[in-house]
Amino acid sequence: MALAATVVIALLGLVHVYILVLEMVLWDTPRGRKAFGMTPEFSAATKVLAANQGLYNGFLAAGLFWGLWLGAAGRPVQVFFLACVLVAGLYGGATASRKIFFVQALPAAIGLLLLLLA
Image 1 (cartoon, helix red, strand yellow):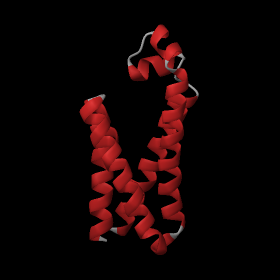
Image 2 (tube, rainbow, N blue to C red):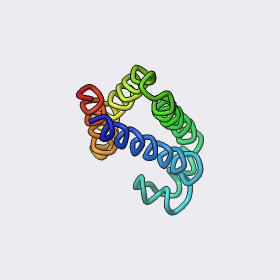
Image 3 (spheres, helix red, strand yellow):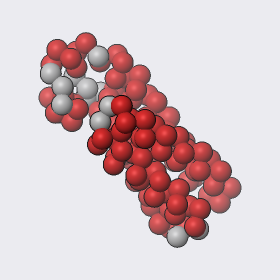
Image 4 (cartoon, rainbow, N blue to C red):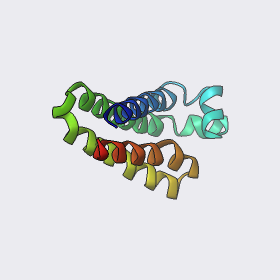
């Protein structure tokens, strides 16, 4: 279970790095607009807000990787950041897009379950 938890946490960290890139770098590009279903006008008008969101996703990724780097001593850090991702995913899934539930909340819940079973 510990290995499975580590893999899920690492993958979730990578997902948040990808989200950071989408929101901070690619938001106002064809790839970013396609990923979030936006018009050029909307992406241009919200570029600064998206960069802020991307930074927060980067903090989540950093926390997940930090917890992994600490090894066994990082378990509380891993639990905290998985819980943060879970809450963010539940809120985003309820308010912005159901897709967020499956990209963030569900993997975080699986990671938490695996971590607690390890």
